[in-house]
Length: 225
Image 1 (tube, helix red, strand yellow):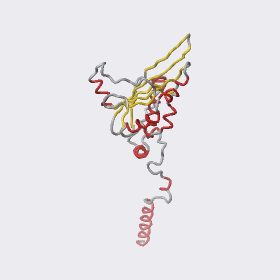
Image 2 (cartoon, rainbow, N blue to C red):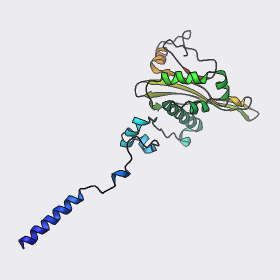
Image 3 (cartoon, rainbow, N blue to C red):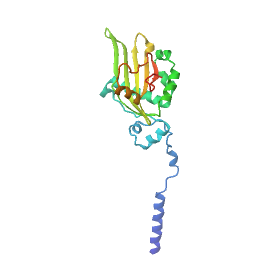
Image 4 (cartoon, rainbow, N blue to C red):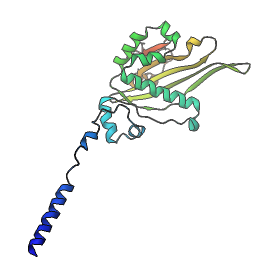
């Protein structure tokens, strides 16, 4: 009887030991951190998730705000979601994608390639989040027909090192000059520079925006680079 009990105890111990071992081949199905470039919406919305933290190391993605069309209206949704898209493109330093969003007229009157290089050097770090803002809407209607329509928005975008005001003007429609459709301009300014002008407001010394479209950054003296 004692012998039977001893044998049973040995069998139970062996079974318990096998249960703690991982199954063969299971680890081969686990994706390594940073290999999934298409981070899910849930991961982006939850910065504490493990997959989000790992993917950020390889491909920094601006926090997805999931702006609602119904709740905030089309202009709010359009301007904020496209601002988010622009910030992601800047993170990726994707000149082709950014150039495709710029209107043909702005590309024709500006050295877009040079301006993009300045922009990519100007931004310190990668954008990780932004504060949504109310867009300005401008439209021209004649005899009930909407001939021109544009949205402008300025978001406070945050990198892992600094903060920037990103001002974007989107032209959705222009019946007179269809080449104006697209992004008319992007102006990126370090927060501390604009804060200085906000705190020391003087209409005579405020920085002047560029008189033509394109991509512009503001230097310490308020001059457009």
